[in-house]
Image (cartoon, rainbow, N blue to C red):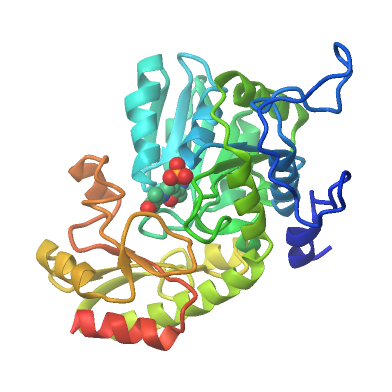
Length: 379
Ligand code: P1T
């Protein structure tokens, strides 16, 4: 089956009680049992819920995995992955990543004696240099948030496999429509479903997908034991969002390209970060592992002045100034003071998150209107 068909049909079937074509929102905490142990597969909604199960089966199918698990946020999903580790274990992570991911690694899990090494993952040698007997996980985000670096998943998968460690990929920016990391050698795929999967800025959720039976058992054990689950209403919304993921992503990619090409020619713009540009340093890797290049575009202004960036994000009218991304409407953000403020300034700058860096989540409005809006703000 092709992607669009899978997105619409996998994991869902007409409701057995009523024939409802849409998966009902099973707004229930518990399930009546006919006798002890005699139930219909559901006992308590922290453990499982039919609306959530449909979504978990659907995301597993479109990521080409075998098992999916849904959580209350992207960070709750990341929390589950790190809880698979033990004190003394080490993680090698990309140094360019969502600020909240950096924060949970540094301020929560380092307290439990898990060590994190942040390295520029464009260079796989940098990863190999940090490997030791305690290394248990490689954490990659690609494209990275917010500078759109592309990390070679196949190369990391080989390192992970030959050293018997796990590779987890945050696939939030690409979505399974553009990239399926499990096919490229990853063990775990993570999503902030708050973004493109939901697609309408109306739900906060995280998802994990794995292939391996043992890893799935551990994932569901932590999901049930820690209890960071999401409610059935949010599952319904994300399941509905995924039904149009392929259509939305085509428009996001088309608009992303138009805006990147507009920005690169603008005299007030310095660097443009969009993996589809032939000038992007990782364009060849992007072409090898992505089916298109997405709707996230970042740029810096000539002179790299904080004040210029703050003025631009204020002057746009169609782009809304807000954290988050991946909705149908366009958003604009200033990473160093917003989404990535949790990362110390020197580490931010090493990763390219400079004062004038502006991040666009290009929506699916008409590209001409979005470009006109950016043009008036930049001029
Ligand atoms: O917000 P939440 O659903 O918990 O997801 C966290 C997260 C994880 N990974 C990536 C790549 C992300 O971008 C995010 C959330 N990011 C934003 C809110 C943002 O504006 O970048």
